[in-house]
Length: 150
Image: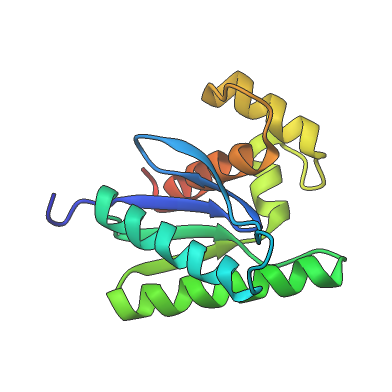
């Protein structure tokens, strides 16, 4: 698979949506009882390493940090730091997209609601279920491919 582009798309949050060419899903990075908050970061790094190895990832796409809730922004920023650090360490390129870019690509509206994103993913991408994190990751994957002209 040398020189082949292998994309991992992420909707980074405590319930982290992910998508590759072969599969998609959600990682639960929730902190368990009696764990430090750092366990979320350790869990995320482990999942990333596992996916990088399993899928031979060469490029990561993710949604840029945004929102209005302070605690969620802090968690997102910490997880983004883990991702960027690991990508730099492993020489894996990455690219962020804004929420409005992703929503506009998926629905034609840059301010689409979560339900519209889920419905579009079900209709156009074959999403089974109704998890907005998984739907967003699937759309981020498509936005990345489109930005590369593939």
